[in-house]
Structures are given as C-alpha cells and as structure tokens.
Image (cartoon, rainbow over all chains, first blue to last red; front, side, top):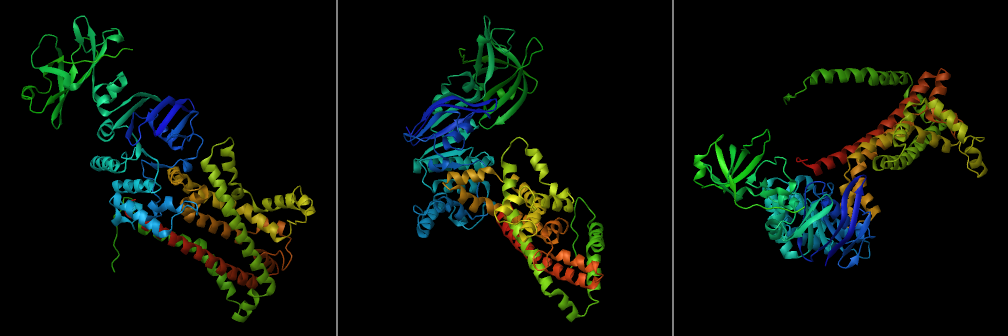
Length: 343
Length: 282
C-alpha cells in the first residue's frame, strides 16, 4: 500500500476537519477525494503532504512512517489550485526549481538539469514556452507547468489540490483527459481533490467520498455510482428526488410521517405519462431544460397542503411525450425504482 | 505628434495636472529656487571653498554614512518586524502595529532627549555599555541609533502591504519541491519584495540624511567627529552667514538628489522587469 493514513484527527478551532480518518490508497492508482466544501478533503490531502500537522494519527508513504517528517523530506509532488508558479521565473526556471534547490551534493549539473527540464516540458507539451513567464500563459498551460515542476523532483506520490478548479469548462475537460493519459504513462500514485462528481467519475479509478470530516464510502466509480452505501453518497452523486413511502404507495410530501419511510428516486427512474395512472403522482411542469441527450423537466409536485417540492424528471430527447407536455401542464409520475437507506 | 485624449470615467486630467504642477511649484520648487538664488550671491571659488571646507566635508561623510548604516539596519529589522506582523497573530499585535508609527508622530527632539536619557553615560543602558567600553551617546554610534529610531516605520510600512499580498502557497510550493527555508527566502520571497524593500530603504535613508532634531541631542556635535551637516547649516545661519548656509544646503541637496535618483532608477528598472513578467494577462 503506497499511502496509508490511520486515525487522523484535525481540528481548526471548533471546526472538525478530519474525524478519525483511516484509509489505504492503492499503489499506482489515480484517486479522487470527493466531497462538498468543508468536508475535510483538502485537509486530508494537506496532512498527507505534510503542509498541515494532524492533531493525532499517522501517515505512511510506501510503508515508511512520515508523520514526523517535514514536507521537504516526504518526496511528494504537490499541485495547487491556483498553480503557485514563481512569477519572476521563466517556465524553464520554474520547472528547474526543485532540481536547483537540492543541496550541492545531490544537485545535478547544469547539463543534466537542462535535459531533465526539457524532457518534462516535452511531457507536458510546452517546450515552446520555456522562455515565457507564467503570466504570459493561459490557465491550462500554467497548470501543466505546475505539474511538470512537481514531477521534476521525481516524487513518490503526486497530490493535486483541485487542480482544475480555476479553469473554464472546456479547458478543464481537456486537462482531465490529459491528466488521465499522463497517469497511465507514469503510473505514479496520485491523489486529487475535487468537489465535482463528474470530474471524479471521469478521471479517477478510485473515489473516496468524504463528508463532515469522515469517509462515507470508497471504491471504484462503478461501485460509487451504482451501489451508494449511504444516503449522503446517493444524494451527492447525481440528482435525486425525495419520496415518502406509505400504506397507499408513494407521496412527495412528508405529511408528518416517520423519517424512516424516506426513499429516493433518480430523475430517470420515473414512468411519466400525461394521464393519471395507478399509483402515479401529479406534478406541474415548470421548465424544460435541454441537457443534450436528455431533457430535464423541473416540475412542482402538486401537494394538498402549502408544502412544495421541486421534482427533477429526465426524459430522452426523442421521447414522443415531450411534444405533448408544455409549461403549466400536469404530468403524472410513477417511480420505477426507489432506494431506501436504513438509519 | 498629436496629443490624444483618452476617454476616462473620471475626467479632469488637464485640471488635475495643472493643479499638480502649480502645487509642486509653490511647495517644492519655489523654496528650492530661493535656496539656489541665495547661493548665487557667492562666486564659484567662494562656493567651492565653503562646500569643500574640511569641517564640512567631514560632516557630509558623517551624515551620509550614518544615514546609510541606519537605513541598512532598518531594512533588515524593519522587514523582520513586517514579517512578524503579517504572518503571526499574538496578543498585543494591534498595539505593536500602532507603536510602529510612533516615530512619525513623536517630536524628534523628544526622541533625541529620550535616547540620551537611556544611552547617555548615566543612562540605564548607556552606563553598562560604557563599562564594557562601548560609548553610545556623543559618538557616530549614537547618531546611527537616533536615525534607526526615526527611519524605522518607513521600511515596515512599505514592506507590510506587499507581504500581506504574498501568497503562502508559493512558500508551500517551494517547500514541497524540497527547497530549504533559506533558499525559499532568497529565490522566492526576496525577489517578490525587492521593489518595496528598495522604496523603504530609500525613504529611511532620505529621512536619515535630513534629520536634525533627534540627532543634535545625542551627537555631542564635536567638529570633525560628531557634527552632522544640517547642524553646520544651522550654525552658519546663527552667524548670519546665509550664503554659506545655503551653499552647504545646495551641496547636500545635490548629493541627496543623486542618491534618490539612483535608487529610483534601480526601482523603475525592477518594475519594468516585473511588468515584463506579468505580461498583459495579469
């Protein structure tokens, strides 16, 4: 196991960032730490890096206890959300920084540094920008320079803190795919923090879901998506609707019922029709959102009391029913598949 | 060449420029011109004789030398204080932050008297130091001390905001790359602070050169040893030798101007380099 953390606790004042976190990360994997803001994912990454000291617990990298070691001696590569490039240095000097900073006895000579930096710049496809300064690059280019800089010192593990967070959607997508390819080439154990579930599902081969300083579930993207073990994971990954199960079937309203009867339904798990069917629930169409291959219908559940609930329903873009329903129309929804979590 | 007028949401360039020139003329240039005019009443040989008199030359050396040393010391310790104020929080931080500006507000004579009381031969620090053979008051050391006191806020106040903007991520990035603390300071932090360090240094130095009030109390004012140029000027005035006083003032002004010009050029060179680095995108 290449990274192992045991019993980590970390508090910032009254706020608990890590609450007894223990996990082993597979060697050579590309792991996503996923969760909403404040869930402790960045704290976990920073504790592993050595940028933050845990209140208690230990960190092992490749079987070696590094808990007491300074970040300088942990041999990790760290990539920041806002790149953290040295702006008074050229791209070349940024990448060479880690090599030049080595103590004299370990420092490679100038020719070796030049060769290494050029090789890394070739790897991130930025050789032609070697003499530019960071401010002259685009966000995506800067992040690739930051990655090359982190890789220059041949780290044992690569830690990335929301590496695509500051980029626009298109560049983000390209860079994700590129990171995946790079990882397949280098096989360096990598952890990246993200709050974007799509990003995690797309890039990682292992996902760790965190909430309130604890690990909710970890597994492959398939396991996370198709077999969520907790209510939180179900709600966090993909959209979901809340339903209440009672003697007569389902209802969108709690009606003061026991919380234990709460169940969930994905937007694409409704049987939709324009007329009332057995066991179906009425809702008024508010908006139709074109999401490409699917059309999402935002509908307001028609409830007896002053309660209100917005229901998301997904239909295939070529569903004939779509032509029949318009705004303010009432549609009837029958859940095909629901999930309940014991508490 | 045509003067193009750029559109701006806040108009009034010509008005503000006119005001600036008028104001600068009234407050700075006019008195300077009067100074030069008075000096003109001397012939060149007379002027030269006054400004190169051995006693005067000794005072230049003392004034500029002590101001330089004081500015260098302020540069180091002022930066350190700014660092502590920006990076750490501790009880009494706001009080210390307010105390920094005290040398600005205190009448300089008060500072001079206070320093003599403490570092004088009978003072609580001066006496033990004297026993160790270190004489502070009435020596160049005492003058330097006074100049450190009055120049201190300049460095702190110019470096502090720049340091505040400095992202700690850059230090973390350097550390993650294995750089030692010293290497990080030398290659990452100092290059970032350099323009503000230079400004702080220049201000502290300029202030030190012109300082009179606090120095005369602790200097002892012995000709050739602890007599600063501003004091000589005052002495000449007291003897109604106005031309002599203005002549020395002119020489001093020329020196100061030259040094400030050098520092400013160095700084704008740094800024140009910085701009080139930040490019158009930042």
